[in-house]
Amino acid sequence: MAGFFATYGNLIVLMVLGAMLGLSLYLPLMTGQLSLASPGFYALGGYIAAILSTKVFITNSSLFPIPLLLLEMLIAGAVCGLLGILVGIPALRLRGIYLAIATIAFVEVLRVISLNLDITGGAVGIFGIPQPFQTAIEYLWIAVPLLIISMFFLYRLERIRVGRAFAAIREDELAADAMGINPTYYKVLAFTLGAILAGIVGAISAHFLNTWNARQGTFDASIIYLTFVLIGGSKTFLGPVLGGMVFTALPEMLRAIADPEITGLQLPTAIAQFLQDGRLIIFGLLIVIGTIFFPQGLVTPDLFKRRRVRNNK
Amino acid sequence: MTPQTTNNLAFNASPILEAKYLTRSFGGLVAVNKVSFVVNNNEIFGLIGPNGAGKTTLFNLITGLIQPSSGQLIYKGDKIIKLRPHQIAAKGIARTFQNIRLFGELSALENVIIGRHIHIKSGVFNGVLNIPPAPIEELKTKHKALELLDLVGLSDRAFEKAQNLSYGDQRRLEIARALALEPQIILLDEPAAGMNPNEKQYLSTFIRQICTQFNLTIILIEHHVPLVMGLCDRIAVLNFGKLIALGNPAEVRSDPAVIEAYLGAE
Image (cartoon, rainbow over all chains, first blue to last red; front, side, top):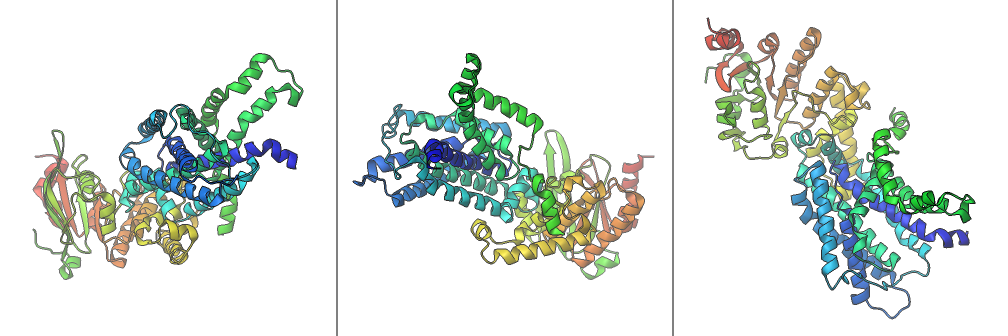
């Protein structure tokens, strides 16, 4: 078991973080808003944690104190939340593909700013971010509770007034408005909640990856998170959780398949190369195929419906 | 104003909604042209007119979906133009749509529960952690929504997706959803469209029933003339955006301008 965790510890933590990033994109999607801003807030949260831990919270102990890590997560969440409100109010006047484009632009603006500021380390980024844990797998002590809290939050959210307002806006914004639901308020709320979550995950990731730079928040990342949600399922929070986990693990699995030492298969070099490096192409293909054959994603509310109907009777 | 003659109005003819020179133009087309009328509390007010007369535009103006070019709307003494639709809904004006606009992916019950939005107070924090008053509110809301579904005869379809309901059921669900707001005024945009004569008869009785039971004011657009004549206390007739007649059914029926609009001039 220890050997398994030593080998796959890294990947397991990344899968849990991936699930939460999927959720951060799912939140605005609950109101029907396709926002690709998550990587921007993720990068910002990471920079906040990186700067705070390397320049502000300097400690002599060999391990970075957990309370300070939690404080960083709190600050990252708060800053991203505020920025989420500021960006959300004007951006959410746009809809559909226009909002997607505007949020991609937002991610790019943040990326270019971080490339050019001294405090973010320019193109090199920030190195030697202190570690709060001895081994990678121990990050699960932070990541798993956070994932459970996020999932509980969304589970409850889908069953209360606010979540129903989100669903109503997703289904028919005009009708929701006529039913007394303020669409702007709830769209900005959903967008901000997603921003907070992405920021918090960024703060953990910065420590976890030990280094942080402008490559963390890119358009590529937007597409990858979008895959988490679209293929996982965009109608229940379990979709992005499953999608985030599977699609974080997928490149590693492809790499393993391509490795003759693991599978014992000697694949042609071209295919092995493609499996190893063609991650974005494969994700792109999966989005296309997935939206044709599973327009609602793999996990849909109907999967649970039979049980729910029985419970209600 | 023409003198009120119907029985229902003899007792309480207090105005609840007033339109003053309400005008809305789309480019060169004046869809609603200086329309003025008063709707009284607890009356059933019909709005008829040929296609394109501006009836739905008038509804959209009243519910804030579009803004008037000029004119004023007064609801219970307050000016309501420039308010957003959700603010107008919160003040007590609910509506249904000509081309049904339910939340299709959600169940019938959820649709009605969403109509209760403005009556639930708990926010994200209380709701997620299920801290009082959230649990009791949720129970009450569900109970109330089931009552309304029962009222429109949809209690056995409560867990059906709204988009899977039959056309007539969807129309009734929209009324239940609007009633869930506990409005003072309810605007019904062609509630009988696509219904057979039996259903129309039932609907007519039903509208009269909710009007009395909930002390509602109902403004209704309908093409089916016998239904309007039988149901409404007063009727306004629009043609090319202009109000051409206003009065009780008998007056409107014999009004030469109305006959001309519907049958053409002699």
